[in-house]
Length: 226
Image (tube, rainbow, N blue to C red; front, top):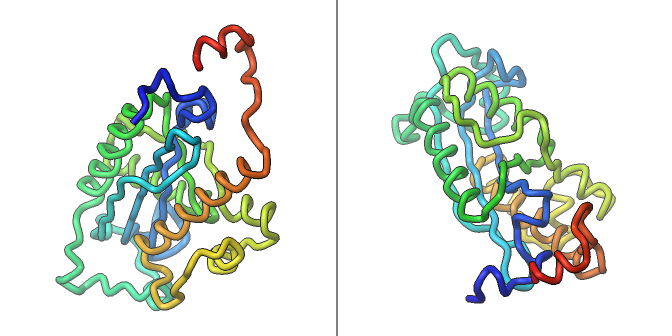
C-alpha cells in the first residue's frame, strides 16, 4: 500500500469531506420520539478510501439494545420492524454498552483516517441522528465523536442523483441488490446504505465531480502535499 505522503491530496479521506469522517448508521426503534421511545437496535459501518480515491465500507458494529428504564414501547413500531423485545435470543445489551462500543469504534477509525470529527450518514438521517444523540445524552457519555447537528442524508443525495428517495428504489437504481425480506434489520439497512453512499460518491468522481482546489491551499502547497 502506498505511503500516505504518496497518495494524492484528493484521494485521502481526511480531505474528501472537509476533515469529517463519515459513518453509516441505522437504528430500529419503538417509536418516533427519540427522547421517550426505546432505541432497540443500532448498526454502524465506517468507511475507507483507497489510493484511487474510491470509498469502500470498512469496519462494522451491531447491537440489539434493551429499552431504557421508562421507555415508551409502541406496538405498531414493533409490528413494523419485527422486533420481539422479550426474546432472550436477541442478546440485547444496555444503551451504555452499545453507545460505548459504537463510539470506541468510531473514534479509533476516525483517528486512523486522520479526520477531525465524525459525521453521521443515514437514510432519512435526522431520525437516526436524533436517536443516537438522545442515547448518548441518556448514558452520560462525554466524548461523542459525532457532529451535533451536521449529517449526510442518503435519501436527499439519492433523490438528487437518481430521482429516488426510498432506500430500496435508490439501491435498485444503483444496481445494488436489495432483499426486501431483510429490510428493517439495522445491520442489513446499514450495509445497503453504505454501499449506496459509496456508489454515489464514487460515481460522482467518475463523472468528474471533485476534486477541486481547497480554499486557502495554494498551488505550491498542494504540490507539496502530493
